[in-house]
Image (cartoon, rainbow, N blue to C red; front, side, top):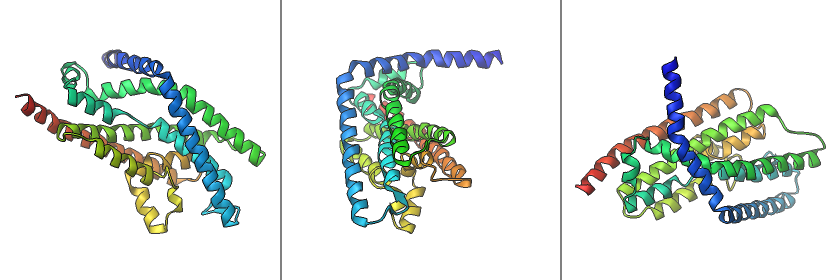
Length: 279
């Protein structure tokens, strides 16, 4: 037991430095972070007015099972989840591969993906304190003002937190896979643009997947992209119940396992590719 405890402490101490570096990095670029937050906020308000126009033109209080209150919560929450689960692992890893500094990470007695993950977790500290809490409070104040009662549900919130953590890990390993492509391609800029567009559309960031026709919606919900944004948002809104909750969480965990496995396989190939280039 003491041996396991010692290993756990050693693991934390090893990657704590990367997390601290991530926190320092996020603090060093506060102006850039603020501009990004303002840009994302503007996007949310633009989407709000677009959906408000859609609901007004439909002449109904509900549209595809969503009220305007639901749609407002969805717009801000889905954007928040996308913000929290965003990761720069593709760009960071690709840059290190291009300039050769990846070798410094490889010769250290650390796991490459864990070191990148620890660094990014440090970056998330500012996001949680400066974005997550204010947005969540704002959403609940809005719902209370419109509905006249507190709609906050602690169970849905905890499910949302668990699902968002899994979504972040999904996004991280998906981006890691794309980052590893830099070992084989001269430039992955085009692939990054394609990846971002696919995630935006298939994750429900632009349009809730519930709005798509039945057969199309069923297919989209089985893809890993739905687990990135749509699932956590719908869990918070209480749109799932009973076995649906178990199913969507199990699906997230399954896709996470698939992405981790694929990243390990590509990393083994990439190391052989790196050895050929350096020989």
